[in-house]
Length: 495
Image (tube, rainbow, N blue to C red; front, side, top):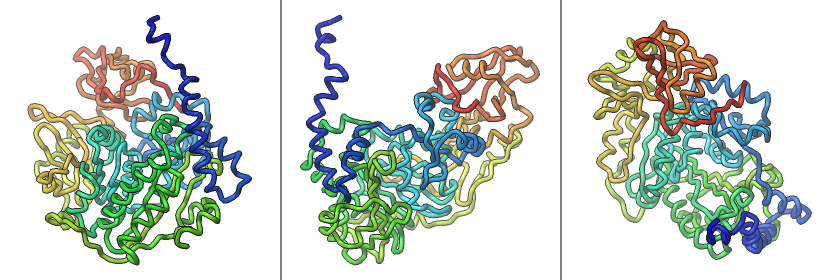
Protein backbone atom coordinates (compact mmCIF):
# COMPACT_ATOMS: atom_id res chain seq x y z
CA UNK A 1 0.00 0.00 0.00
CA UNK A 2 1.35 3.43 -0.94
CA UNK A 3 2.18 6.16 1.57
CA UNK A 4 -0.63 8.23 0.04
CA UNK A 5 -3.11 5.43 0.73
CA UNK A 6 -1.76 4.99 4.28
CA UNK A 7 -2.30 8.67 5.00
CA UNK A 8 -5.70 8.96 3.33
CA UNK A 9 -8.41 10.01 5.80
CA UNK A 10 -10.81 7.25 6.76
CA UNK A 11 -14.57 7.60 6.56
CA UNK A 12 -14.66 8.09 10.33
CA UNK A 13 -11.92 10.75 10.12
CA UNK A 14 -13.92 12.68 7.53
CA UNK A 15 -17.02 12.42 9.70
CA UNK A 16 -15.10 13.73 12.73
CA UNK A 17 -13.72 16.59 10.65
CA UNK A 18 -17.28 17.80 10.00
CA UNK A 19 -18.48 17.45 13.59
CA UNK A 20 -17.76 21.07 14.68
CA UNK A 21 -19.44 22.41 11.55
CA UNK A 22 -22.38 20.09 12.08
CA UNK A 23 -22.82 21.35 15.63
CA UNK A 24 -22.76 24.94 14.37
CA UNK A 25 -25.43 24.15 11.78
CA UNK A 26 -27.70 22.37 14.24
CA UNK A 27 -27.46 25.22 16.74
CA UNK A 28 -28.23 27.72 13.97
CA UNK A 29 -31.35 25.83 12.89
CA UNK A 30 -32.76 24.53 16.16
CA UNK A 31 -33.45 28.08 17.34
CA UNK A 32 -36.19 28.13 14.65
CA UNK A 33 -38.13 25.25 16.21
CA UNK A 34 -41.55 26.28 17.53
CA UNK A 35 -41.23 24.08 20.62
CA UNK A 36 -37.93 23.66 22.54
CA UNK A 37 -38.81 20.11 23.55
CA UNK A 38 -38.47 19.11 19.89
CA UNK A 39 -34.72 19.78 19.86
CA UNK A 40 -33.54 16.19 20.67
CA UNK A 41 -35.81 14.65 18.01
CA UNK A 42 -34.75 17.30 15.50
CA UNK A 43 -31.04 16.68 16.08
CA UNK A 44 -31.56 12.94 15.75
CA UNK A 45 -33.45 13.32 12.46
CA UNK A 46 -30.85 15.71 11.04
CA UNK A 47 -28.08 13.14 11.59
CA UNK A 48 -29.96 9.99 10.52
CA UNK A 49 -30.25 9.14 6.84
CA UNK A 50 -33.93 8.77 5.86
CA UNK A 51 -35.30 5.75 4.04
CA UNK A 52 -35.54 5.25 0.26
CA UNK A 53 -38.48 6.90 -1.46
CA UNK A 54 -39.70 6.37 -5.02
CA UNK A 55 -42.31 7.98 -7.23
CA UNK A 56 -44.27 5.98 -9.78
CA UNK A 57 -44.10 7.46 -13.29
CA UNK A 58 -47.70 7.18 -14.47
CA UNK A 59 -46.82 8.39 -17.99
CA UNK A 60 -45.84 4.79 -18.77
CA UNK A 61 -48.66 2.20 -19.01
CA UNK A 62 -46.69 -0.39 -17.05
CA UNK A 63 -46.56 1.95 -14.04
CA UNK A 64 -50.21 1.27 -13.16
CA UNK A 65 -49.45 -2.38 -12.45
CA UNK A 66 -46.15 -1.67 -10.72
CA UNK A 67 -47.58 1.07 -8.52
CA UNK A 68 -50.46 -1.09 -7.34
CA UNK A 69 -48.19 -3.99 -6.45
CA UNK A 70 -45.62 -1.79 -4.68
CA UNK A 71 -48.35 -0.21 -2.58
CA UNK A 72 -48.85 -3.50 -0.75
CA UNK A 73 -45.24 -3.61 0.51
CA UNK A 74 -44.47 0.11 1.04
CA UNK A 75 -45.61 3.10 3.08
CA UNK A 76 -47.72 5.75 1.39
CA UNK A 77 -46.59 9.39 1.25
CA UNK A 78 -49.49 11.46 2.63
CA UNK A 79 -49.23 14.37 0.18
CA UNK A 80 -48.35 12.53 -3.05
CA UNK A 81 -50.39 9.53 -4.20
CA UNK A 82 -47.68 8.44 -6.66
CA UNK A 83 -44.89 8.39 -4.06
CA UNK A 84 -44.05 5.78 -1.45
CA UNK A 85 -41.34 4.75 1.00
CA UNK A 86 -39.80 1.34 0.43
CA UNK A 87 -38.91 -1.09 3.20
CA UNK A 88 -35.20 -1.01 4.24
CA UNK A 89 -34.39 -4.34 2.63
CA UNK A 90 -35.30 -2.94 -0.82
CA UNK A 91 -33.50 0.38 -0.49
CA UNK A 92 -30.14 -0.86 -1.78
CA UNK A 93 -31.46 -2.51 -4.94
CA UNK A 94 -33.77 0.20 -6.32
CA UNK A 95 -31.30 1.66 -8.81
CA UNK A 96 -30.59 -1.80 -10.29
CA UNK A 97 -34.22 -2.91 -10.38
CA UNK A 98 -36.08 -3.68 -13.59
CA UNK A 99 -38.84 -1.28 -12.55
CA UNK A 100 -36.38 1.61 -12.23
CA UNK A 101 -34.45 0.75 -15.42
CA UNK A 102 -37.68 0.76 -17.45
CA UNK A 103 -38.46 4.30 -16.26
CA UNK A 104 -41.52 3.27 -14.27
CA UNK A 105 -39.94 4.50 -11.01
CA UNK A 106 -38.01 7.64 -10.10
CA UNK A 107 -35.97 7.81 -6.91
CA UNK A 108 -37.17 11.00 -5.23
CA UNK A 109 -37.20 11.97 -1.56
CA UNK A 110 -40.73 12.54 -0.34
CA UNK A 111 -39.96 16.09 0.82
CA UNK A 112 -39.17 17.10 -2.77
CA UNK A 113 -42.49 15.81 -4.14
CA UNK A 114 -44.37 18.37 -2.07
CA UNK A 115 -43.33 21.34 -4.23
CA UNK A 116 -45.01 19.95 -7.36
CA UNK A 117 -48.10 19.01 -5.35
CA UNK A 118 -48.27 22.65 -4.28
CA UNK A 119 -47.70 23.85 -7.84
CA UNK A 120 -50.64 21.68 -8.99
CA UNK A 121 -49.90 21.81 -12.75
CA UNK A 122 -52.86 21.00 -14.99
CA UNK A 123 -53.12 19.37 -18.45
CA UNK A 124 -52.80 21.86 -21.31
CA UNK A 125 -51.11 24.62 -19.30
CA UNK A 126 -47.87 26.52 -19.84
CA UNK A 127 -45.47 25.64 -17.02
CA UNK A 128 -41.89 26.71 -16.31
CA UNK A 129 -39.39 24.85 -14.14
CA UNK A 130 -36.65 27.47 -13.99
CA UNK A 131 -33.89 25.38 -12.32
CA UNK A 132 -34.88 21.92 -13.50
CA UNK A 133 -31.85 19.56 -13.27
CA UNK A 134 -31.58 16.73 -12.53
CA UNK A 135 -35.24 16.44 -13.49
CA UNK A 136 -37.14 14.88 -10.59
CA UNK A 137 -39.64 17.70 -10.27
CA UNK A 138 -39.75 18.29 -14.04
CA UNK A 139 -40.76 14.68 -14.70
CA UNK A 140 -43.32 14.92 -11.90
CA UNK A 141 -44.76 18.05 -13.56
CA UNK A 142 -44.92 16.34 -16.97
CA UNK A 143 -46.77 13.45 -15.35
CA UNK A 144 -49.33 15.78 -13.76
CA UNK A 145 -49.83 17.48 -17.16
CA UNK A 146 -50.36 14.04 -18.78
CA UNK A 147 -47.85 15.02 -21.49
CA UNK A 148 -50.08 17.86 -22.75
CA UNK A 149 -49.55 21.62 -22.83
CA UNK A 150 -45.95 22.80 -22.66
CA UNK A 151 -43.33 22.39 -19.95
CA UNK A 152 -40.27 24.63 -20.29
CA UNK A 153 -37.46 22.95 -18.33
CA UNK A 154 -34.58 25.40 -17.88
CA UNK A 155 -31.17 24.55 -16.47
CA UNK A 156 -28.51 27.28 -16.53
CA UNK A 157 -25.58 24.97 -15.72
CA UNK A 158 -24.53 23.14 -18.87
CA UNK A 159 -22.84 20.30 -16.98
CA UNK A 160 -26.23 19.33 -15.53
CA UNK A 161 -28.13 19.30 -18.83
CA UNK A 162 -27.32 15.67 -19.63
CA UNK A 163 -28.99 14.47 -16.43
CA UNK A 164 -32.08 16.60 -17.10
CA UNK A 165 -32.48 15.47 -20.71
CA UNK A 166 -31.80 11.84 -19.80
CA UNK A 167 -34.45 11.78 -17.07
CA UNK A 168 -37.05 13.50 -19.26
CA UNK A 169 -36.40 10.94 -22.01
CA UNK A 170 -36.44 7.97 -19.62
CA UNK A 171 -39.78 9.06 -18.19
CA UNK A 172 -41.38 9.41 -21.64
CA UNK A 173 -42.04 13.17 -21.32
CA UNK A 174 -42.52 14.76 -24.75
CA UNK A 175 -44.40 18.00 -23.96
CA UNK A 176 -41.07 19.63 -23.11
CA UNK A 177 -38.87 22.48 -24.25
CA UNK A 178 -35.39 22.36 -22.68
CA UNK A 179 -33.53 25.65 -22.35
CA UNK A 180 -30.24 26.68 -20.75
CA UNK A 181 -29.80 30.26 -19.59
CA UNK A 182 -29.67 32.25 -16.37
CA UNK A 183 -33.10 33.01 -14.94
CA UNK A 184 -32.77 36.79 -15.24
CA UNK A 185 -31.80 36.38 -18.90
CA UNK A 186 -34.79 34.13 -19.61
CA UNK A 187 -37.06 36.77 -18.08
CA UNK A 188 -36.00 39.18 -20.85
CA UNK A 189 -37.79 36.96 -23.39
CA UNK A 190 -40.92 35.83 -21.49
CA UNK A 191 -43.23 38.40 -19.93
CA UNK A 192 -46.32 37.62 -17.82
CA UNK A 193 -47.01 34.41 -19.74
CA UNK A 194 -46.70 31.16 -17.73
CA UNK A 195 -49.67 29.66 -15.90
CA UNK A 196 -47.38 28.16 -13.26
CA UNK A 197 -43.70 28.52 -12.39
CA UNK A 198 -41.59 26.34 -10.11
CA UNK A 199 -38.39 27.75 -8.65
CA UNK A 200 -36.59 25.00 -6.77
CA UNK A 201 -33.75 27.35 -5.98
CA UNK A 202 -30.05 26.48 -5.74
CA UNK A 203 -29.35 26.61 -2.01
CA UNK A 204 -26.88 25.65 0.71
CA UNK A 205 -28.75 22.38 1.32
CA UNK A 206 -28.73 22.71 5.09
CA UNK A 207 -31.83 20.52 5.23
CA UNK A 208 -30.16 17.52 3.60
CA UNK A 209 -27.17 17.15 5.92
CA UNK A 210 -28.75 13.87 7.02
CA UNK A 211 -27.72 12.33 3.70
CA UNK A 212 -24.91 14.61 2.53
CA UNK A 213 -22.31 15.74 5.08
CA UNK A 214 -20.24 17.26 2.27
CA UNK A 215 -22.40 20.40 2.32
CA UNK A 216 -20.81 21.19 5.68
CA UNK A 217 -17.52 21.90 3.92
CA UNK A 218 -18.87 25.23 2.70
CA UNK A 219 -21.89 25.98 4.92
CA UNK A 220 -21.94 29.03 7.18
CA UNK A 221 -24.56 31.67 8.05
CA UNK A 222 -22.60 34.07 5.85
CA UNK A 223 -22.74 31.63 2.93
CA UNK A 224 -26.51 31.30 3.38
CA UNK A 225 -26.85 35.10 3.12
CA UNK A 226 -24.79 35.09 -0.10
CA UNK A 227 -27.00 32.37 -1.51
CA UNK A 228 -30.08 34.44 -0.68
CA UNK A 229 -28.92 37.26 -2.97
CA UNK A 230 -28.92 34.86 -5.93
CA UNK A 231 -32.23 33.36 -4.81
CA UNK A 232 -33.91 36.78 -4.65
CA UNK A 233 -32.83 37.50 -8.23
CA UNK A 234 -34.16 34.14 -9.44
CA UNK A 235 -37.44 34.58 -7.57
CA UNK A 236 -38.00 38.03 -9.05
CA UNK A 237 -37.32 36.69 -12.55
CA UNK A 238 -39.69 33.76 -11.97
CA UNK A 239 -42.42 36.07 -10.71
CA UNK A 240 -42.08 38.35 -13.75
CA UNK A 241 -42.55 35.43 -16.18
CA UNK A 242 -45.73 34.33 -14.38
CA UNK A 243 -49.03 35.53 -15.84
CA UNK A 244 -51.45 37.59 -13.83
CA UNK A 245 -53.38 35.23 -11.54
CA UNK A 246 -50.78 32.49 -12.04
CA UNK A 247 -49.15 30.37 -9.34
CA UNK A 248 -45.47 30.36 -8.38
CA UNK A 249 -43.91 27.89 -5.95
CA UNK A 250 -40.61 28.82 -4.33
CA UNK A 251 -38.87 25.86 -2.72
CA UNK A 252 -35.47 25.00 -1.23
CA UNK A 253 -33.89 22.07 0.59
CA UNK A 254 -32.86 24.48 3.34
CA UNK A 255 -34.49 25.31 6.66
CA UNK A 256 -32.80 28.63 7.45
CA UNK A 257 -34.80 31.86 7.27
CA UNK A 258 -31.92 33.48 5.36
CA UNK A 259 -32.71 31.35 2.30
CA UNK A 260 -36.47 31.29 2.73
CA UNK A 261 -38.45 34.05 4.48
CA UNK A 262 -35.74 36.63 3.77
CA UNK A 263 -35.95 35.76 0.07
CA UNK A 264 -39.72 36.25 0.11
CA UNK A 265 -39.11 39.68 1.63
CA UNK A 266 -36.81 40.44 -1.30
CA UNK A 267 -39.64 39.64 -3.71
CA UNK A 268 -42.10 41.82 -1.83
CA UNK A 269 -39.67 44.75 -1.77
CA UNK A 270 -39.53 44.63 -5.57
CA UNK A 271 -43.19 43.99 -6.46
CA UNK A 272 -45.16 45.01 -3.37
CA UNK A 273 -48.89 44.33 -3.42
CA UNK A 274 -48.61 42.31 -6.61
CA UNK A 275 -47.27 39.48 -4.42
CA UNK A 276 -49.71 37.34 -2.43
CA UNK A 277 -48.40 34.55 -0.19
CA UNK A 278 -51.06 31.84 0.00
CA UNK A 279 -51.67 29.30 2.72
CA UNK A 280 -50.69 25.70 2.06
CA UNK A 281 -53.26 23.24 3.47
CA UNK A 282 -51.28 20.04 2.74
CA UNK A 283 -48.87 20.80 5.57
CA UNK A 284 -49.96 22.54 8.77
CA UNK A 285 -47.16 21.73 11.24
CA UNK A 286 -44.26 23.71 9.78
CA UNK A 287 -44.45 26.85 11.89
CA UNK A 288 -41.50 28.84 13.24
CA UNK A 289 -40.60 29.80 16.80
CA UNK A 290 -42.79 32.73 17.84
CA UNK A 291 -39.88 35.11 18.42
CA UNK A 292 -38.64 34.43 14.87
CA UNK A 293 -42.03 34.44 13.11
CA UNK A 294 -42.87 37.87 14.49
CA UNK A 295 -40.11 39.39 12.34
CA UNK A 296 -42.02 38.57 9.15
CA UNK A 297 -45.39 39.55 7.67
CA UNK A 298 -48.35 37.60 9.00
CA UNK A 299 -48.99 36.12 5.51
CA UNK A 300 -45.71 34.22 5.70
CA UNK A 301 -47.31 31.81 8.15
CA UNK A 302 -48.85 30.18 5.08
CA UNK A 303 -45.44 28.96 3.89
CA UNK A 304 -44.49 25.36 4.69
CA UNK A 305 -41.31 24.29 6.47
CA UNK A 306 -40.83 20.52 6.36
CA UNK A 307 -39.24 19.56 9.67
CA UNK A 308 -37.30 16.26 9.36
CA UNK A 309 -38.28 14.98 12.79
CA UNK A 310 -41.98 15.38 12.05
CA UNK A 311 -42.03 13.71 8.64
CA UNK A 312 -39.05 11.30 8.60
CA UNK A 313 -37.50 13.00 5.59
CA UNK A 314 -34.94 15.65 4.75
CA UNK A 315 -35.64 19.29 5.58
CA UNK A 316 -37.22 21.62 3.03
CA UNK A 317 -39.25 24.80 2.60
CA UNK A 318 -41.85 26.02 0.13
CA UNK A 319 -44.10 28.99 -0.41
CA UNK A 320 -47.09 29.31 -2.76
CA UNK A 321 -47.31 32.73 -4.41
CA UNK A 322 -50.08 34.23 -6.54
CA UNK A 323 -49.40 37.11 -8.93
CA UNK A 324 -51.98 39.87 -8.60
CA UNK A 325 -51.02 41.98 -11.62
CA UNK A 326 -48.60 42.28 -14.54
CA UNK A 327 -44.98 43.32 -14.05
CA UNK A 328 -42.24 44.97 -16.09
CA UNK A 329 -38.61 43.92 -16.52
CA UNK A 330 -35.62 46.24 -16.76
CA UNK A 331 -34.17 44.91 -20.03
CA UNK A 332 -36.35 43.10 -22.57
CA UNK A 333 -35.78 41.20 -25.78
CA UNK A 334 -38.33 40.30 -28.42
CA UNK A 335 -41.24 38.72 -26.58
CA UNK A 336 -41.25 34.94 -27.16
CA UNK A 337 -44.37 34.48 -25.06
CA UNK A 338 -46.88 34.60 -27.96
CA UNK A 339 -45.18 31.57 -29.50
CA UNK A 340 -46.03 29.61 -26.36
CA UNK A 341 -49.67 30.63 -26.48
CA UNK A 342 -50.30 29.36 -30.02
CA UNK A 343 -52.66 26.39 -30.20
CA UNK A 344 -51.85 24.74 -33.55
CA UNK A 345 -53.27 21.46 -34.80
CA UNK A 346 -51.41 18.18 -34.60
CA UNK A 347 -48.86 17.77 -37.39
CA UNK A 348 -47.54 14.63 -39.09
CA UNK A 349 -46.82 15.77 -42.64
CA UNK A 350 -44.86 12.66 -43.63
CA UNK A 351 -47.31 10.14 -42.23
CA UNK A 352 -44.85 8.67 -39.74
CA UNK A 353 -47.59 7.55 -37.36
CA UNK A 354 -49.19 5.49 -40.13
CA UNK A 355 -45.88 3.90 -41.09
CA UNK A 356 -45.15 2.92 -37.49
CA UNK A 357 -48.68 1.54 -37.09
CA UNK A 358 -48.30 -0.65 -40.19
CA UNK A 359 -44.96 -2.00 -38.98
CA UNK A 360 -45.70 -2.59 -35.31
CA UNK A 361 -49.49 -2.72 -35.08
CA UNK A 362 -49.62 0.13 -32.61
CA UNK A 363 -51.31 3.52 -32.62
CA UNK A 364 -49.46 6.75 -31.92
CA UNK A 365 -52.14 9.13 -30.69
CA UNK A 366 -50.64 12.59 -31.16
CA UNK A 367 -51.62 14.88 -28.28
CA UNK A 368 -53.19 18.22 -29.13
CA UNK A 369 -50.58 20.77 -30.15
CA UNK A 370 -47.84 18.25 -30.95
CA UNK A 371 -45.97 17.21 -34.08
CA UNK A 372 -44.21 14.08 -35.27
CA UNK A 373 -41.32 15.26 -37.38
CA UNK A 374 -37.98 14.04 -38.69
CA UNK A 375 -34.85 16.11 -38.07
CA UNK A 376 -31.83 14.55 -39.71
CA UNK A 377 -31.83 10.91 -38.64
CA UNK A 378 -34.09 11.43 -35.63
CA UNK A 379 -37.87 11.24 -35.50
CA UNK A 380 -39.21 13.45 -32.71
CA UNK A 381 -42.55 13.90 -30.98
CA UNK A 382 -42.56 17.46 -29.70
CA UNK A 383 -44.77 20.51 -29.14
CA UNK A 384 -45.81 22.02 -32.49
CA UNK A 385 -43.87 25.12 -33.36
CA UNK A 386 -40.85 24.17 -31.25
CA UNK A 387 -38.64 24.83 -34.26
CA UNK A 388 -39.39 28.55 -33.90
CA UNK A 389 -37.42 28.58 -30.65
CA UNK A 390 -34.33 27.15 -32.32
CA UNK A 391 -33.24 30.66 -33.28
CA UNK A 392 -32.84 31.64 -29.62
CA UNK A 393 -29.43 31.10 -27.99
CA UNK A 394 -30.99 29.51 -24.92
CA UNK A 395 -32.75 26.72 -26.89
CA UNK A 396 -31.38 23.20 -26.30
CA UNK A 397 -33.97 20.71 -27.56
CA UNK A 398 -37.64 19.80 -27.45
CA UNK A 399 -39.81 16.73 -27.21
CA UNK A 400 -38.77 13.09 -27.21
CA UNK A 401 -36.99 10.87 -29.70
CA UNK A 402 -39.41 8.29 -31.10
CA UNK A 403 -37.14 6.58 -33.61
CA UNK A 404 -33.84 6.70 -35.48
CA UNK A 405 -34.09 6.68 -39.27
CA UNK A 406 -31.76 4.73 -41.57
CA UNK A 407 -32.29 4.11 -45.30
CA UNK A 408 -36.07 4.65 -45.12
CA UNK A 409 -36.31 2.41 -42.07
CA UNK A 410 -36.89 3.51 -38.50
CA UNK A 411 -35.68 1.90 -35.30
CA UNK A 412 -38.01 2.55 -32.35
CA UNK A 413 -36.43 4.27 -29.36
CA UNK A 414 -36.56 2.81 -25.87
CA UNK A 415 -38.98 5.59 -24.87
CA UNK A 416 -41.37 4.69 -27.70
CA UNK A 417 -41.33 1.05 -26.59
CA UNK A 418 -42.07 2.08 -22.99
CA UNK A 419 -44.97 4.38 -24.01
CA UNK A 420 -46.66 2.30 -26.71
CA UNK A 421 -45.04 -1.14 -26.76
CA UNK A 422 -47.86 -2.72 -24.77
CA UNK A 423 -50.01 -2.49 -27.93
CA UNK A 424 -47.72 -4.77 -29.95
CA UNK A 425 -49.09 -8.25 -30.60
CA UNK A 426 -47.78 -9.69 -33.88
CA UNK A 427 -44.06 -9.06 -33.37
CA UNK A 428 -44.05 -9.78 -29.65
CA UNK A 429 -41.45 -12.10 -28.12
CA UNK A 430 -41.79 -13.25 -24.51
CA UNK A 431 -38.50 -13.89 -22.69
CA UNK A 432 -37.64 -15.32 -19.28
CA UNK A 433 -35.72 -13.78 -16.37
CA UNK A 434 -32.39 -15.31 -17.30
CA UNK A 435 -32.63 -13.98 -20.86
CA UNK A 436 -33.62 -10.58 -19.50
CA UNK A 437 -30.60 -10.38 -17.22
CA UNK A 438 -28.28 -11.21 -20.11
CA UNK A 439 -29.84 -8.52 -22.33
CA UNK A 440 -29.49 -5.89 -19.59
CA UNK A 441 -25.82 -6.78 -19.23
CA UNK A 442 -25.38 -5.68 -22.85
CA UNK A 443 -24.93 -9.14 -24.34
CA UNK A 444 -26.96 -11.23 -26.77
CA UNK A 445 -28.90 -14.14 -25.31
CA UNK A 446 -30.03 -17.47 -26.68
CA UNK A 447 -33.50 -17.55 -28.26
CA UNK A 448 -35.70 -20.37 -27.01
CA UNK A 449 -38.35 -20.05 -29.70
CA UNK A 450 -37.44 -19.81 -33.41
CA UNK A 451 -40.87 -18.68 -34.67
CA UNK A 452 -39.86 -15.00 -35.05
CA UNK A 453 -36.83 -13.46 -36.72
CA UNK A 454 -35.82 -9.85 -37.32
CA UNK A 455 -37.16 -6.96 -35.26
CA UNK A 456 -39.35 -7.77 -32.25
CA UNK A 457 -40.47 -6.20 -29.00
CA UNK A 458 -39.33 -8.31 -26.07
CA UNK A 459 -41.79 -8.76 -23.20
CA UNK A 460 -41.25 -10.02 -19.69
CA UNK A 461 -44.11 -10.61 -17.26
CA UNK A 462 -46.41 -8.82 -19.75
CA UNK A 463 -44.20 -5.71 -19.69
CA UNK A 464 -42.68 -4.31 -22.91
CA UNK A 465 -38.91 -4.32 -22.33
CA UNK A 466 -37.06 -3.22 -25.46
CA UNK A 467 -36.79 -3.47 -29.22
CA UNK A 468 -34.61 -6.46 -30.12
CA UNK A 469 -33.32 -8.28 -33.19
CA UNK A 470 -33.62 -12.05 -33.50
CA UNK A 471 -30.96 -13.61 -35.74
CA UNK A 472 -31.99 -14.95 -39.15
CA UNK A 473 -31.65 -18.53 -37.92
CA UNK A 474 -33.75 -17.77 -34.84
CA UNK A 475 -31.08 -18.80 -32.34
CA UNK A 476 -30.05 -15.53 -30.63
CA UNK A 477 -31.54 -12.23 -29.48
CA UNK A 478 -29.69 -8.93 -29.48
CA UNK A 479 -31.37 -6.40 -27.22
CA UNK A 480 -31.38 -2.70 -28.08
CA UNK A 481 -31.18 -1.46 -24.50
CA UNK A 482 -29.54 1.98 -24.09
CA UNK A 483 -26.18 1.93 -22.32
CA UNK A 484 -27.48 4.15 -19.51
CA UNK A 485 -30.17 1.56 -18.71
CA UNK A 486 -27.88 -1.47 -18.67
CA UNK A 487 -26.69 -3.15 -15.48
CA UNK A 488 -24.93 -6.46 -14.73
CA UNK A 489 -26.87 -6.62 -11.44
CA UNK A 490 -30.47 -6.53 -12.64
CA UNK A 491 -32.90 -7.20 -9.78
CA UNK A 492 -36.63 -6.99 -9.14
CA UNK A 493 -38.52 -5.11 -6.48
CA UNK A 494 -41.53 -7.27 -7.24
CA UNK A 495 -41.45 -11.00 -7.93
